[in-house]
Image (cartoon, rainbow, N blue to C red):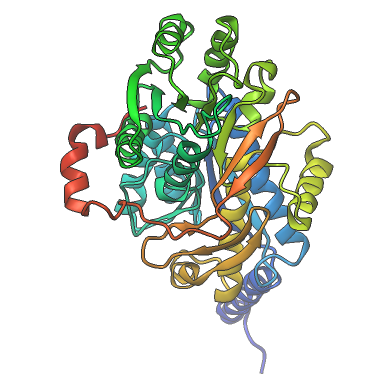
Amino acid sequence: MKTSHKSRTPLILLIAVLIGGALLWHHYSSGKLSIRIGVLHSLSGPMAASEKPLVAAIQLAIEEANAAGGIGGQKIEAVVADCRSDATYCAQQAERMITEEHVQALFGCWTTDCRKKVKKVVEEHRHLLFYALRYEGMEQSPNIIYGGAIPNQLVMPAVNWALENLGKEGNPEKHGKRVYLAGSDYIFSQVLSILIKDMAGAHGAVVVGERYQPLGAANMDDLVADIADKQPDIVFNTISGPDNNVFFKTLKKNGIVAAMMPVLSFGVTEVELKGAETAPMAGHYAARNYFRTIPTHENQAFVKRFRDRFGEHALLDSPAEASYLNMRMWIQAALEASSGDLHKVQRTILRQSLLAPEGIVSLDPVTRHVWKVARVGRSREDGQIDVVWDSGKPLEPAPFPTYRSREEWKHLLGPIASPQP
């Protein structure tokens, strides 16, 4: 019996649907569909020079993972948004990444203002942000992985080291008893000033002065004149990264050098030094968890891979290394989950540890911050920083330093804990 053309039509359509579905499944299972992650960093505006190396570090980690087979055969694809050095715009891009680009995780932000604005977005959507910057702490979110250091992992041990070791020139028995606090007028400096004053008091040191400059200040003559007048043994510097160029040039212009008045900085990296004349900071100190000069095999291999990929003069610093680390942690969690799916990675991410360029790091499942080694380095004429001290082992993260309760911290910080640039 012949089958009419009319009767064959539904059968042909059914076969077409089945074949199409099979092809779609083959397309998915063969790894041709990518796992999309969002990158939120400034590629333009005043923050671009600092943030571009972070994008490069994330890109390197993705390329290495894809070369090794990706996640279950699926490649990782970075969807990059230029945050334009604007925290509000960055939060808008985070919303777009989640709702339109359907990314499985977000990597980005630099300033506290940016992080806090994006924090609202990822919490509303129950999404996941990886943040790489050292910051002032006093925060914990179920939707953020904090890959940078907090004060008890960097500022507090470095201040303790400085108070015991600096300010002795010409008098070996003398400890740094007179300290000066120089910072930028934003939340990082304001929180750190409380912590440093607490530590100075515990050491019997006296804070002889403190001043805070507007972000982007082009003139620091008054600040440096006040430092010269107060003659502290140590200056603790929390000035925002790019503004340190003006600060150290002004110090040098006024004859203040490391041998007579050492400065310990918490906002200086190799990237900021490379972007300016490096000589004014030579001999002064910086506190970070990572320096490019760390002599371990893992770090030197990382530096070589980074330079091979982005050029011999590519800039690399602590935030970039932490960005690479964050991406590697996500990759490990996705491999363990056999999927890049947001919800599956959320279940595996909190048990990740790895050997990073900075050393062994582990994600703390309670605080969602990373255990990290604290380091102090001394800057050289060429802009590199040599390690002079480290904590010897990774330090447990305590977002709210334990010598006060969390409620006491929130009450003490009050209005300064609200988002600022």
